[in-house]
Image (cartoon, rainbow, N blue to C red):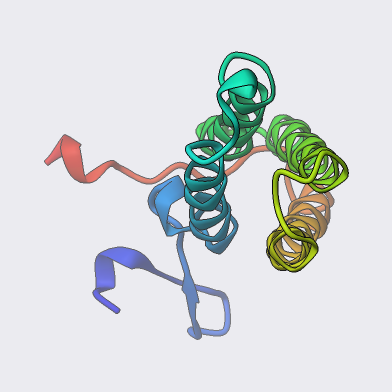
Length: 151
Protein backbone atom coordinates (compact mmCIF):
# COMPACT_ATOMS: atom_id res chain seq x y z
CA UNK A 1 0.00 0.00 0.00
CA UNK A 2 1.46 3.41 -0.88
CA UNK A 3 2.62 5.58 2.02
CA UNK A 4 -0.11 8.12 1.24
CA UNK A 5 -2.72 5.53 2.20
CA UNK A 6 -1.07 4.46 5.45
CA UNK A 7 -0.81 5.93 8.88
CA UNK A 8 1.86 4.87 11.33
CA UNK A 9 0.45 4.07 14.75
CA UNK A 10 2.21 4.52 18.06
CA UNK A 11 3.74 1.07 17.63
CA UNK A 12 5.03 2.01 14.15
CA UNK A 13 2.74 -0.64 12.74
CA UNK A 14 0.91 0.46 9.54
CA UNK A 15 -2.86 0.87 9.86
CA UNK A 16 -5.20 1.06 6.92
CA UNK A 17 -6.67 4.47 6.13
CA UNK A 18 -9.89 4.90 4.22
CA UNK A 19 -9.36 7.86 1.91
CA UNK A 20 -12.86 7.83 0.41
CA UNK A 21 -16.13 6.07 1.09
CA UNK A 22 -15.40 3.91 -1.97
CA UNK A 23 -12.56 2.28 0.00
CA UNK A 24 -14.98 0.95 2.63
CA UNK A 25 -15.91 -2.71 2.33
CA UNK A 26 -19.38 -1.79 3.59
CA UNK A 27 -19.83 0.57 0.64
CA UNK A 28 -18.40 -1.88 -1.89
CA UNK A 29 -20.69 -4.70 -0.78
CA UNK A 30 -23.72 -2.41 -0.54
CA UNK A 31 -22.99 -1.13 -4.05
CA UNK A 32 -22.92 -4.69 -5.40
CA UNK A 33 -26.24 -5.37 -3.70
CA UNK A 34 -27.72 -2.13 -5.08
CA UNK A 35 -26.80 -3.28 -8.60
CA UNK A 36 -28.65 -6.56 -8.05
CA UNK A 37 -31.71 -4.68 -6.84
CA UNK A 38 -31.65 -2.49 -9.94
CA UNK A 39 -31.42 -5.62 -12.11
CA UNK A 40 -34.41 -7.06 -10.25
CA UNK A 41 -36.52 -3.92 -10.70
CA UNK A 42 -36.04 -4.12 -14.46
CA UNK A 43 -37.91 -7.45 -14.57
CA UNK A 44 -40.79 -6.59 -12.24
CA UNK A 45 -44.22 -6.45 -13.89
CA UNK A 46 -45.24 -3.21 -15.59
CA UNK A 47 -47.88 -2.62 -12.90
CA UNK A 48 -45.05 -2.25 -10.34
CA UNK A 49 -42.92 0.14 -12.41
CA UNK A 50 -44.02 3.23 -10.48
CA UNK A 51 -44.76 1.52 -7.18
CA UNK A 52 -42.63 -1.31 -5.84
CA UNK A 53 -39.80 -0.90 -8.37
CA UNK A 54 -39.48 2.80 -7.62
CA UNK A 55 -39.56 2.18 -3.87
CA UNK A 56 -36.88 -0.51 -4.15
CA UNK A 57 -34.62 1.71 -6.23
CA UNK A 58 -34.99 4.56 -3.76
CA UNK A 59 -34.14 2.28 -0.82
CA UNK A 60 -31.17 0.82 -2.70
CA UNK A 61 -29.81 4.29 -3.46
CA UNK A 62 -30.40 5.30 0.15
CA UNK A 63 -28.40 2.26 1.26
CA UNK A 64 -25.23 3.41 -0.51
CA UNK A 65 -25.81 7.16 -0.30
CA UNK A 66 -26.03 7.07 3.49
CA UNK A 67 -22.71 5.24 3.68
CA UNK A 68 -21.14 7.88 1.44
CA UNK A 69 -22.66 10.81 3.31
CA UNK A 70 -21.80 9.35 6.69
CA UNK A 71 -18.20 8.88 5.65
CA UNK A 72 -18.08 12.56 4.73
CA UNK A 73 -18.96 13.53 8.30
CA UNK A 74 -15.98 14.05 10.55
CA UNK A 75 -17.81 13.24 13.75
CA UNK A 76 -18.22 9.61 14.79
CA UNK A 77 -21.78 9.95 16.17
CA UNK A 78 -22.85 11.47 12.82
CA UNK A 79 -21.20 8.63 10.92
CA UNK A 80 -22.99 6.09 13.10
CA UNK A 81 -26.34 7.79 12.52
CA UNK A 82 -25.89 7.56 8.74
CA UNK A 83 -24.80 3.91 8.95
CA UNK A 84 -27.95 3.18 10.96
CA UNK A 85 -30.01 4.91 8.26
CA UNK A 86 -28.25 2.77 5.66
CA UNK A 87 -29.03 -0.37 7.65
CA UNK A 88 -32.67 0.70 7.87
CA UNK A 89 -32.84 1.06 4.08
CA UNK A 90 -31.32 -2.40 3.74
CA UNK A 91 -33.97 -3.91 6.00
CA UNK A 92 -36.63 -2.11 3.97
CA UNK A 93 -35.23 -3.84 0.88
CA UNK A 94 -35.39 -7.21 2.62
CA UNK A 95 -39.08 -6.62 3.28
CA UNK A 96 -39.61 -5.59 -0.33
CA UNK A 97 -37.98 -8.85 -1.41
CA UNK A 98 -40.62 -10.58 0.73
CA UNK A 99 -43.26 -8.69 -1.27
CA UNK A 100 -41.67 -9.97 -4.49
CA UNK A 101 -41.90 -13.51 -3.19
CA UNK A 102 -45.44 -13.11 -1.79
CA UNK A 103 -46.69 -11.71 -5.09
CA UNK A 104 -44.82 -14.41 -7.08
CA UNK A 105 -42.70 -11.85 -8.95
CA UNK A 106 -39.63 -13.95 -8.14
CA UNK A 107 -39.01 -17.58 -7.34
CA UNK A 108 -38.32 -18.43 -3.72
CA UNK A 109 -34.73 -19.43 -4.58
CA UNK A 110 -34.06 -16.03 -6.18
CA UNK A 111 -35.43 -14.23 -3.14
CA UNK A 112 -33.41 -16.46 -0.82
CA UNK A 113 -30.18 -15.66 -2.70
CA UNK A 114 -30.86 -11.92 -2.64
CA UNK A 115 -31.81 -12.00 1.04
CA UNK A 116 -28.64 -13.95 1.83
CA UNK A 117 -26.61 -11.22 0.12
CA UNK A 118 -28.60 -8.56 2.00
CA UNK A 119 -27.92 -10.16 5.38
CA UNK A 120 -24.21 -10.39 4.53
CA UNK A 121 -24.20 -6.64 3.82
CA UNK A 122 -26.14 -6.18 7.07
CA UNK A 123 -23.42 -8.00 9.00
CA UNK A 124 -20.70 -5.84 7.41
CA UNK A 125 -22.62 -2.69 8.29
CA UNK A 126 -23.02 -3.92 11.87
CA UNK A 127 -19.28 -4.51 12.08
CA UNK A 128 -18.55 -1.02 10.78
CA UNK A 129 -21.03 0.47 13.27
CA UNK A 130 -19.30 -1.42 16.10
CA UNK A 131 -15.94 -0.09 14.88
CA UNK A 132 -17.25 3.49 14.81
CA UNK A 133 -18.79 3.15 18.27
CA UNK A 134 -15.43 1.96 19.57
CA UNK A 135 -13.79 5.05 18.11
CA UNK A 136 -16.11 7.36 20.07
CA UNK A 137 -14.28 6.44 23.26
CA UNK A 138 -10.99 7.52 21.70
CA UNK A 139 -12.18 10.75 20.12
CA UNK A 140 -15.42 12.26 18.88
CA UNK A 141 -13.76 13.58 15.74
CA UNK A 142 -12.33 11.74 12.78
CA UNK A 143 -8.76 12.65 11.91
CA UNK A 144 -8.82 14.55 8.66
CA UNK A 145 -6.16 13.98 6.01
CA UNK A 146 -5.38 16.23 3.07
CA UNK A 147 -7.27 15.20 -0.02
CA UNK A 148 -5.47 13.96 -3.09
CA UNK A 149 -7.32 16.80 -4.84
CA UNK A 150 -5.54 19.38 -2.64
CA UNK A 151 -2.20 18.62 -4.32
